[in-house]
Image 1 (cartoon, rainbow, N blue to C red):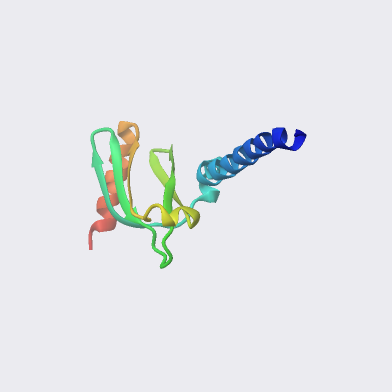
Image 2: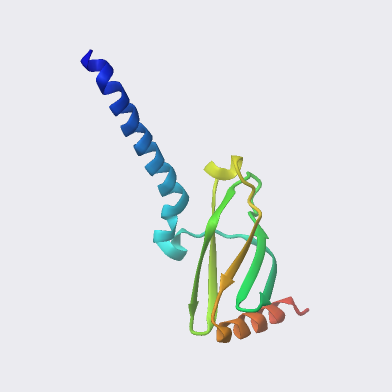
Length: 120
């Protein structure tokens, strides 16, 4: 009889532990900042209003799901890193579109740098 009372508690503890592992894998990488970011294929960068819109994909052959991005403005420049996960590749594709809000003076620098990179 005592064993039957312990089973729900054990199942609940296991569910909480698995949920914590899942959330740590999905969102915990942001604690590492740019050290946790990976390379990404960027297809377009558009500057509009108060944001920079970046579209891209995971460049590898094995599908890895897009987990998110880490962005920081420093010295008038916008730095953006991306993170992918093979665990989530079965649920999502590696394609992404993100909008990063930045101050106006950083938008000018990003726009100028993007035009410079695009010119032949």
